[in-house]
Length: 195
Image 1 (cartoon, rainbow, N blue to C red):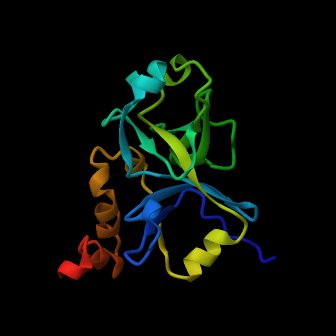
Image 2 (cartoon, one colour):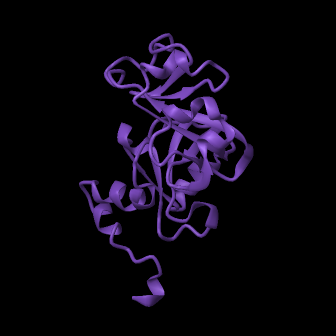
């Protein structure tokens, strides 16, 4: 097997050609990517369920909109917390002991939250928090195959992507900020047959 170059912390942006309805115009933050597979959360799928309805103790730390997001089609009955800790972006991502208790760095200032920990441990440190029901997962080599087929654009993430107050516009805004022909893809119509 060839060595996999880690895409952890980067965004997968669905191409207009991606046919899977689970990922139509999806923006996925990769939380883990190695030779054993990949795991991420869809950043732009808010649900109508409030964070307080399922994780009341974390509701006050959740950013706007204060709802649970559908992180992907896998394990919809499980919850993942992703938080940005301001001031952590410049620190080494190799040192897992960095950052507040109850938070594990994924990339830069972005990290996973231990939802079993008391929220008070993180309250002073967290700049924004999102709760995701489920996740997106790929087995060994599966994501690489999808990338080779042109299903995804891979771009750098920014801490603000996790906490975008307008998640329904995230697909277009991530593409628009690219300094290449990808910026033009942001203008692609929702329904190309109407063009």
